[in-house]
Image 1 (cartoon, helix red, strand yellow):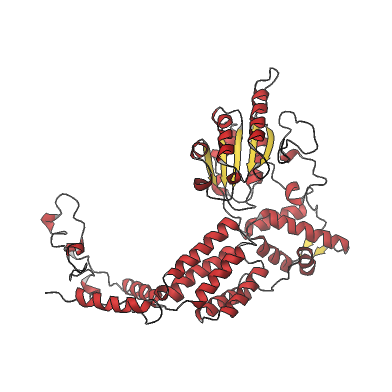
Image 2 (spheres, rainbow, N blue to C red):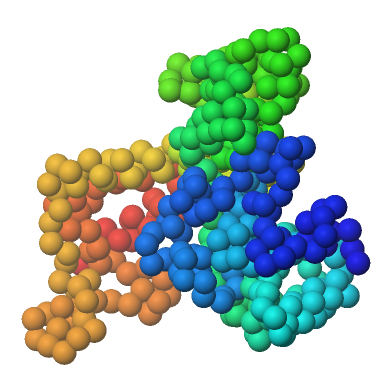
Length: 455
């Protein structure tokens, strides 16, 4: 059997309910394992999955047989939910790693689960947890189907990748898909406080300095496991120094990462982010790379960086290089799929592309000018020929009756009025002559000439 398969490491086969990770001997377990919630009520975050009557609560509290597919970023509670399902429903817990397990291992677990269900003296149900199920081949996923379909096992499968692309349709259709979200800083702070005080954790041995807490939250990036792992390492450093406070220096030493001291509530947190965007706007690729590196080393949430790049792609580049938005969005998607530290490469590529792209703010100027007019009350009625004509009686009131179909004109443009009277003839979009926008400048001038040459 694969080394990725276990009921309880180093323990005999558990009795009914004995296989849950929540029941492990925690004396030598990592802090993240020791602090793993024992019930749904102890879960932090994922409130959209925990409402009364939700499928997850029905499964756990009503002990209803169903299989789950958990999709979300690392450290959001996928393994925890699997353990809670096992513990609170009093089932045996078996884990397979998609990295090491094969079809033989899958079939072996399912066969054992069938035998447990058929016991004359008390049937035992099994929760089969598979981490990184997207790494399973089609054959391996197919091997799960009999166990899921016949409910010989309660499958809880976890993935960080879009299951609609990485999980076979039959397995997807037989499982309840639950999407997990990255934890907020407030969620992580709750977990840190709990770990510092709880007897399963550090049991009040240490306090956490405020600047160390801020740095730890930045480095966590919404990942609970990472936050608790760093806290445990820092606690070891403080214990070696016989200190009762985990300060910033101790934390930095423990995780081997220098803190860029900026305040997340304002000040340098936003100063550095502003400097990154302004360096991109100013086409200084080297300065932009410096500020990106500072944010990464400070443990800044990579999703925050990616969002700023997506905004910059339209705000500062726009039609100067329309492909820039696609580059920024692709980088943001890469951050979601891959995570740090590898996603730093995707962010760096986007920064280089955006910094070197031709710049234009014509798009943001256009939309803001249009919004300003709308707010000023310039919202005249839609011209009658543009109104919806797809209902009985529309022609009787003149809706759509004189509309001219653009594709019927050899130019693809018909000289008719589109804007309300109050803003007819207003130019919102004023393209520059930089980069690819130069071609759009010529085109928009020709189009406006045709549109306004009405007889």
